[in-house]
Length: 373
Image 1: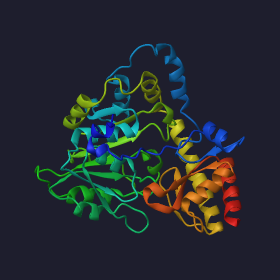
Image 2: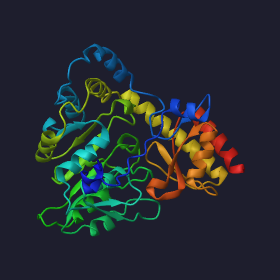
Image 3: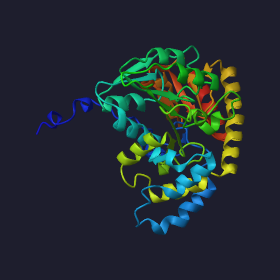
């Protein structure tokens, strides 16, 4: 049976997302006793203690299906952000949110605008639906060029992805820049501005920047705007897969109609509902990242390594004189997992997650060793 004859054309030759391997798998493959993982932008402090307690409390309930509407979690999100629950939706992480939006809105004839070097899942979602990805070059300094992205929109533009701050560069756009962008978007053939999907996965880290602004401030005046965030990063719940978003009641209603039932599991809902108001988790995580980011910046400068200043919990740095994949492989042999950026068309760059001080010191020690070879 030649199965490819039955597969949708947009899925033929589709390349899967390359996820980082678990530590235990790499230990076996590399024959190493100890490995530190600084590759996936996880929180080095671990999960919110309130979330862990909520998971333990709900373990005996896992034979039940979860609340398909995530009622308690939405109520907590509504209280936290002073937003009606009718404007809130939940999903199994940011990845599912991207896919839900694509399945709901993207057609074969649609164009989807996104920035070069932005999260790869956007172009994957467009391709999955057979839509055309329109890639706009970044400004110098690896920052979204919002005026150029607005100019790239035409009558066929259905949606625009904006990552703020951006993964993998760590750069962000200011409140003034976002406001001008939303105002300048042209109308498409439907007579509306394109849907703007604002990915704020690293919102809590970027909130420390004076001129950073979350997208919720723009929702009332922009019915075409969708803002989404995640519990995977600062709250430390990456393994539970839970994300959330905000949009107009009409958009939220259609997302709710078309998402899979029970898409957020019972433990994820309980953990997220407990974590959202964990101020201690947020403060400790922000403080750690700010301090350790400064440490890594100084070490990079001492080594003469170019890097991009980041508003998130990771740093993009230049791998010269090695290629990114070569440096990744050399560090891996030394027991340090980072992330090469070839899939983001950045073959001379590597992304490192900011860890605990002892992890960061080991990373710098091994980086020095590799660069001296």
